[in-house]
Image 1: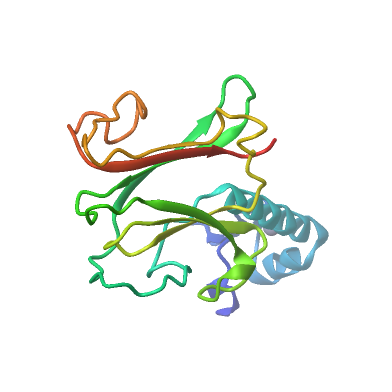
Image 2: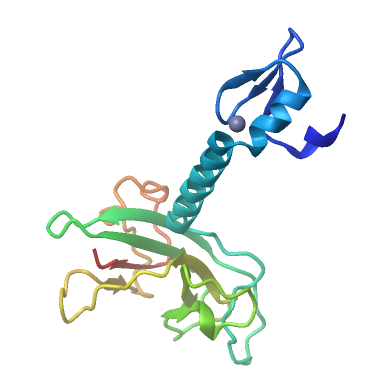
Length: 204
Ligand SMILES: [Zn+2]
């Protein structure tokens, strides 16, 4: 019987018995195992597992693939690909709010261009299936391709409510080393680079 080929939970032991790795139950033959998979215990565990995976997925940051969803008007620049980036999950100690800190490396940004950030709901874009669990955080900086990150579709704390919650830093003249900003981040000790840094917090 090959029916179990696509079942990720079946495990054949060296004794010839079958184990359900989801429920940790032992079965003497395939018939017994198949009956178990139709049973309440296995079905409940499957539902629990699916719910857990959904929850984990909602908290995950999806890194950008294939250009992102923003319909940027074409300008005079020849696009030079996506910039490098670093993302750090943060927690504001005073409010306990979770947030994200982005650092986008822009060593080749065009003169007099200031990076522009923007949030976009899943409903506004056309490139990916609509998913109400996510929104997009985007940074445009010519001549780079606009970069889009899928983030949880949670409400962002308004800057009027908490002026410290949201900020950005961009200084094209200094090529600053922002080691004080991302203390444990990957870029902390790599020396000066031109980067756009911004953070925001999610409402609790
Ligand atoms: Zn099972």
